[in-house]
Length: 572
Image (cartoon, rainbow, N blue to C red):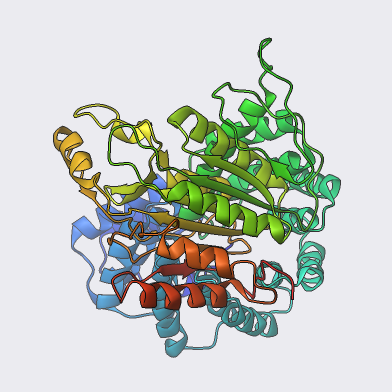
């Protein structure tokens, strides 16, 4: 995600007064204030100048600014913010606000970044570069309309800004305008065919259109350019372009069914040092997907049955053997897949009677509206893990992926875990390794061309919180009975088509298992999920109202969404 720099030269002219020490003027000054100086030398020279205590006010602000530039080259955004804050205290300037805003952007603090870009624009003059950078921050918040408006201003200021065309195209793609996105990305490539970033973005457009060969070709050219001509702009996070290129090409290989090459690209992604939030999110996805395609490429054990996949339904797996899937057909645009799990027959805590019933009811409702459903009931750890991994692998071929889980769940140190029926929590044991990490599911689903819906009816009258706390006594683990609110929705990596997470109750609260055959939440969900023409968030609103009424306000379902438009599970 290219960020642009503004007015570097304006912050050097007034630096050296005639009274400055000769060492600073003749030796340290050029190292500190030259954009091409290596990061370590730049930081060292600026630090020595500050230590001389020769400069004050505007001149000292300039030194702090340039040291922040050095930190930015190194990807140390906390130190960028510290030095630019001191520079602003000494002398507020447009370029300094722009640099600090960009550092906040790289840390994922988009609201603060936007505030800094606003202040930069107030200091004037109007800058297409700052409009561009603020557009990036709006895009980080998934406010694509605002982002497009800022990119429009940037393009108006500089019609030859390849990156503004590129990022406007990314925003249009996120809103589903693939043709408009392709036009903008093509213009960016025409303006500067040496840039790898627009090719990476065109990779995802071709993949969304189902043209995997073009996607792979663009990804390959982007990787070549990133290796031959690494970005030198100080506002581009180190290695971010190469990481993104490998990740996008790997997703294209995987969608095509070429697991071997996908595995090679995911491995290459993980071998590169990541410095920014987007790159780390890409690597989180690569780590999960690497394990999935590695499993898929493994040889089938001699005593394993031949895998079969019926045309509409994958049967609930009850065996624990690791049987890899056959090489898949290329992804089919419009495919909708669901993973449904209901765990109730717990061996070491109080059993829950309703989750199996709930899972079956929701699975039937989804099959009735055309979803390909993988369904499992009362799964032990090995089977639950295999079923989840098989689904994540197959989801590479879907346009909509839905995950539904009913059963026990806990949060441990703020992370959410789903509980297989055979888990026995013991003090000092690898407790979380025995459970299914919800963050891993989210990372495995993060993809620019898919809509993800995750629904969790967990923590029902949960007896496990105390066991979690006692099991984690020696490890400083904090356990709670309710699930935690997600810290992200897979953001930062692909800024995808959108994710919706729905919980049966509010974060940190427990849900009711109910007195009938189904829980209050899942009973309402199975009734409304198949309603024709009902948008998914409106559907969840109806579910929420019904649950609140049936539980007499004891339970309030909760959801968080980054969906970019209206999503209909059952056609109008």
